[in-house]
Image (cartoon, rainbow, N blue to C red):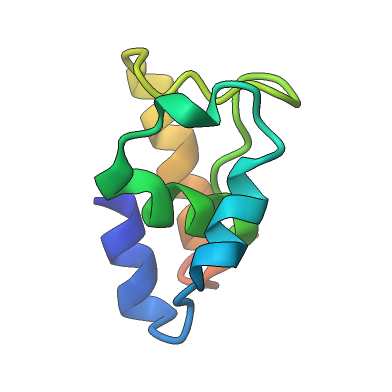
Length: 85
């Protein structure tokens, strides 16, 4: 949902297959990101919205807390200048 909202504000944020692979390559568990979500995750990493759980781990199969979701939403709103930084 956050990736869709981001694309509403930044419609030119599409990525090529190589860019997706490059963004995900930094994380040791990138292979665990579902195929359907790879572009969304890579796009949000590139935008600085997703920062992972540490510098090398995404934990894509883990459940998120309300605080983590709130942080993602806040980062997306700040990066797209929809709220003040």
